[in-house]
Image 1 (cartoon, rainbow, N blue to C red):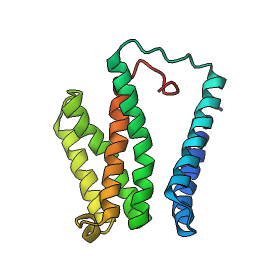
Image 2 (cartoon, helix red, strand yellow):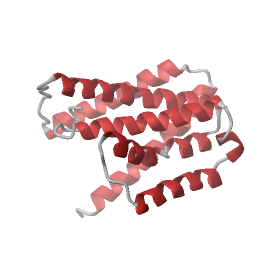
Image 3 (cartoon, rainbow, N blue to C red):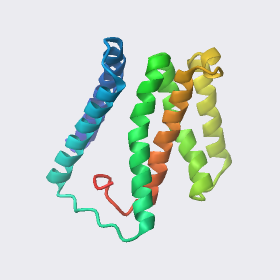
Image 4 (tube, one colour):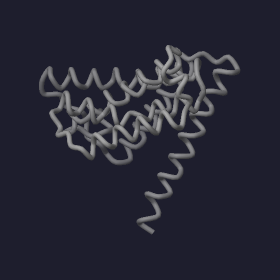
Length: 180
């Protein structure tokens, strides 16, 4: 039974994520503004995190210096910027392109971690980045990806913001995810 719980949770999260992405497109199509979508999704995230934190009895955040405050604020900026850029991307290009470009995030995390955190680079990691880029080109519309389409630009910025969220969270690794 223990092994089934994480699998079921992952399955449920996948369904919620897919429904959320489709609902973004639907809400935009019926005229609900990006600002409303953003506020509702952030409110849902806040309530979810607070409920989990209360259930797991997560300790309060205690900042010890200005560097920690800087990374916490930077993490918050990236955390808020990612969904805004994602929804903006959906306004200008297809859901397929936005998803595939947005999920180049692991490649950007690798690159930014090597630059800012000094993580090691090896051939296997470089091959993975190359495979990611090749996969994006093969799966989505290459003519749109290599154009100045605002949706593509916002999707790339969303991926970079998501990567920034991950990188700054790594710097705050002594804090729980809920506190961050």
